[in-house]
Amino acid sequence: MKLLAVSDLHFSLGQFDWLVQEAPRYDAVIIAGDLLDIAGHLDLDSQIVVVAKYLRTLGSRTRLLVCSGNHDGDERDAHQEYNARWLHRVRAEGLAVDGAGLDLGPLHVSVCPWWDGPASRAALHEFLRRERPADGRPWLWVHHAPPDGLGVSWTGTKHAGDASLVALIEELRPAYVFSGHIHNSPFRSGGAWAARCGTTWAFNAGRQLGSPPACIVFDPAGPSARWISQAGTEDLDLAAAPAAG
View 1 (cartoon, rainbow, N blue to C red):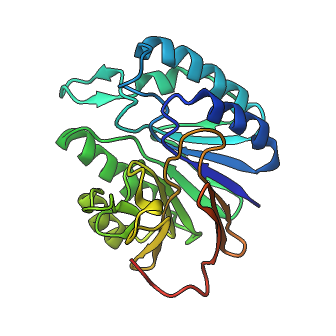
View 2: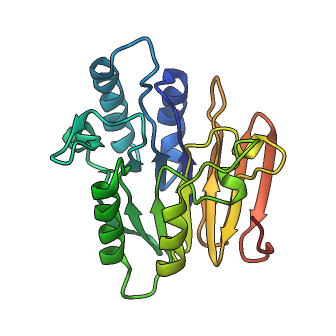
């Protein structure tokens, strides 16, 4: 079983095109948030129409797991916090989005919505506490922001991850967390594309311009991970690698 993980495509159509071509080679594709680009030249409604079409195509070619990021919110809820309601309106056979929990081969996967304030953060924490697999199988979270204080949250000058996620990881102990959000982490001295938070492996492929996107190929049977980017290719044996931040 092999999974392909990317994040922060930010309406890069060349990167979406690459994903469509590559998707059939994998048992699942993860997009860890920020599909849209709030700073782009095209309005969000138009971006949503285009990206939704890509998601339907990808979902017809493999299992597709998509969480929202801070660029993806299109509606405010009763607490005046943004959420990506448009993701729930996309109908595709193999698509799992914010709030989904599913068994995928040997893994249990939880797809986490972006939290925009205290109410949505509390709802996310409650969701994950409910999701904890009772059978003890390895648990994988798709969560846009990486855990704070690790190489995967390093901007080059400071850590800018999610501090509340660290506490939740320590409480619930998932095996893997796939994130994005901090574009430069794998490309900066002191940063990383993979790091441990206790016994949990956290991943952030980073963002690069052009096509293909930076990506991670994950094999839970190893378990192993391969990072592929314009900086080169790195392989990691997750069972043998020492703990590192």
